[in-house]
Length: 242
Length: 242
Image (tube, rainbow over all chains, first blue to last red; front, side):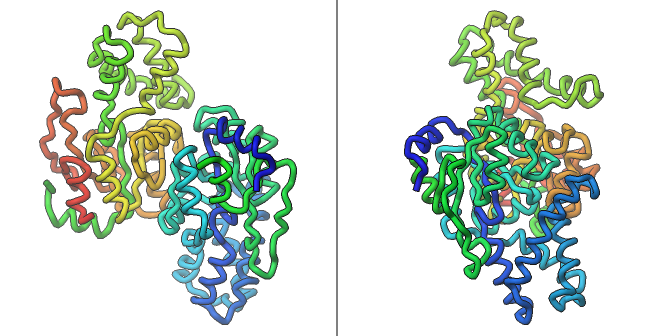
């Protein structure tokens, strides 16, 4: 489902680089964490645990961006949040090795079923890169684990700023030496897309109704600000003639 | 040809990340530039031109590292050197568009015949990343053009330092959150390998006798400081059990 077929044609013709949000857009963080918690700590409510962990993410990045905390990799933000929430879930006793292992679940997230195929199709026509707040090591390990065929791994770590800071979106254009309108951000979050649009990038929304779990279906109503609106990455590939 | 089979076994067992030098090690910069000059400007001595362009590279990076010039992407260093040498080769008249196109030859360098296959084999067992002074855009475009299946594209651009600065070698270990001895640098230049070794990385030398052209065969005598000595990337893959 495209907002307008002619917009899809324009993007297919003019855009060089597709930059992908990762958590939620390409990989299923909620479902992956729930499944891993069920396997490791079946007494814990995995759904509530996944949501609590993720809920700490934006506030932790905001602290860094306000300068209250020095530049920090997302692996380390995830670990701080984990240490904070474990007692709430009866896991205060978890030893260091188990905390380290659990924290790396973000490196082992599963891709949505369409992601590897959709990216492989899109890669034939576009340069496909991550643009995630996740650190480079996390994104690289995840790609190997989930079979994601990135041309390039760009991260907040490269730009020393988290999305939605303009340095990240404009950083992609700068890295590839193209004007911002030749880069499209692909994401399932409207705030991310709006920030990219404000920098002059094109935008493609991906629905991902199950991002927060089956109990909390996400509203995927198309919003007119986005250039493209796709059900998943295969749908996006189809729309862009790949 | 391995310095010692037991060293190869140790590396295969302990190393997680292979970081590759690019110009000369993975791609044939000299031959690619000679061929492109023959096609575009057949009156010019392509061999001398390629050597002159490359000869400006180390001094330009040294200027940046001494602080005489701000942080500069290699694309821009290549362009400064190009502008400087064109008059010597009777090409002072080259218009801007042709200079821009010619400068991008570094994005279009051809891989050595074994590179794509060797990397694909090594990728099954190791995380394979670039570690080049070339900028991210250059390395990504080159990989698409030459079919190089990197897991990750690391560059001086990420670390804001050129090799042989320790921040680059140690930066790879930091990005992947492993100790330096779990990273091996793969390169055809002994000075690069020596600097990596001084940071605690393992090292693998690749011969590449034709790096400077058939007229200037490189001395590939094994040096005892390197952990491994391979003829090419398939030989390295074989040695490491891939």
